[in-house]
Length: 244
Image 1 (cartoon, rainbow, N blue to C red):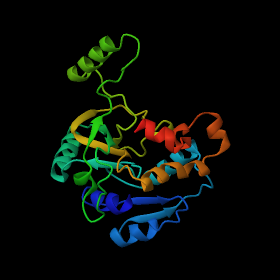
Image 2: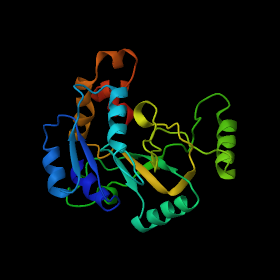
Image 3: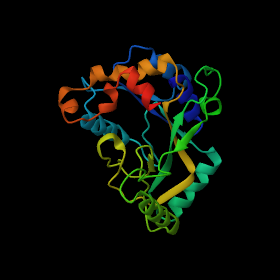
């Protein structure tokens, strides 16, 4: 993913930090060859403990001044650079310090067509759906709750959207995240329609990606699995295909 992810984000960010979790697939070499000005920091953790991982992320995040964003390697910030600059300048002038992006779940509609590493992944694999289109789908009084939710968003009464991939851009010391960084304790000052976070959870959908999704379970501590944290990392291929 880094062969697509780093070139994409060097167009949007002035600097970057790659936190290396004992990778053995050449991730560090890829980062240093494509973005030699980025910092590579080896994790201090021995396993992938969810809470400790978030604390470590915020520790490094606090060393960065100005606007910042924390992303997984499967998450792509999607917005034209000049458009993003204008949005952030407007936020700063209005003393707004936290923006919530729109999360998009990327699903490969043509899994037999392999993506080239020489071209932008966003341009090659661009199918997906906005995560919070039906935030209460299937729940009790779902249609009424959906309607009320979207009316609140449209009127500006609701300052945050539901969804796991609505990552934030902010200028605080840290993002003050909940577990998994899917939420924040900061006030959401702006919900921006033209700024998206594409989550490549089901795209590209090839065997290499499927194997990648299953590898992290070996690093998750038993304490987390007992609390059902990171449960999706334990899905086998049959369950992953079902979800896809």
